[in-house]
Image 1 (tube, rainbow, N blue to C red):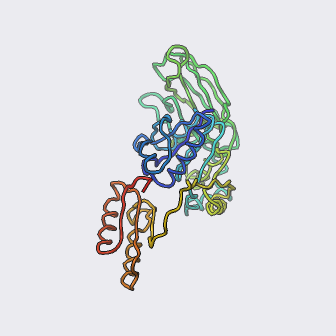
Image 2: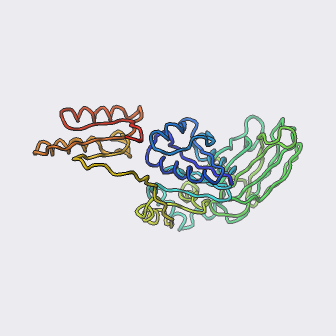
Image 3: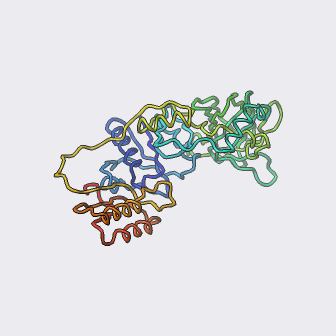
Length: 376
C-alpha cells in the first residue's frame, strides 16, 4: 500500500511536524510511505531525528510547490493520502484520504456569510459554474478556449451535467490517454488521436472536484500532454472557468468543500474536535500526539517552556518575552532559587525576536536555548 504524508511546514521543526512525522514513522513499519514537502521548504530527515526524535531517515521525499493544485495532483499517486498540514485546502484524489487538523481555521468571513445567505436565497442557483482550481490557462493567439498542461483541477457547481469539448493541443502527435476523475472516481477514460475533438460530459454535482489528466501512450509513456478545451457549456450556454460572474461572486463556493474529498477528519485532541464541530460542522476522531516516556530526574526549582520562537506579530507567538517580564516581576518581589529556561527552534526571520528575549533576560536566572537538540 502506497501512502503519501503531506506537511507544508516540515522545515519549521515544530510540534505539528513531530506529530506528522510520528504518523509517517509508525506507518512506515508496514507500508510504503512517502513524505510530501514544498520544494522551497526542504525536509531534512537527519535534523528531524536530532531535534524531534522522529526517524524518517530513508523514506522517499517528494517535493511539490505548496499551492493546493499540485498537492491534489500528487495525492492521485497514492492509495492513501494523509494531509497533516495546517490550514491546507488541498482536495484529496486518492482512494482513501485522511485530513488531520491541528486546529480548524477560522469560521466564515463576512464575505462567506454573505455567500451563504445568497445561496439560501438561491441567488446563485440559476448560474451554474465550472471554475479552475489550477492547471488551466487561456489559449493564446488565434486559438479559442483553455489549455491544460497535462493536468488540471476544476470545480463543478451545477445541478445539471456540464459539457466539455476537448482536443489535443497543436503539435501533439502521440497517442494520448485522457482520464477524468470526478471526486475520486474515474468517470471517463479514453484515447485521443489527431485533431478530432471529443465530447465529455461531467456529472452534475455541488462543489465536486474534477481532475483532467492527459499523458502519452506507447513510447515515452506517462509524459504529460497539453490539451485544448475548446468549449465548456451547460445546456448549450458557454461557461468561462477563469471568470467569475456577479452571481458567482455573491454566492462563492462553500469554503470547506475540500473536506468532502476526505474519508476521515482527525483531531489532535478533544478540544480541537469540539472546535471542528463548531466551526466546520463536522465530526472528527481523536488521535493524540505521541509522548515518548523517559525516566524521571530529580526535581529542581526550574520552570521550563518548550516552544518555537515567533515574532510578536506572528499568530503562533509563544509569548516568551512576556514570560521573561513576568519572571522578572516575581524576582523583584522576592522570588529566589528558581530558574526559567526557554527552549525552542528559531528560524532566521524570527531571530530578532529571540534576541529581544535574550536582552530582556539579562541579569536574571533565565536561560534561552535556541535550536537545541532533542536530548536537551
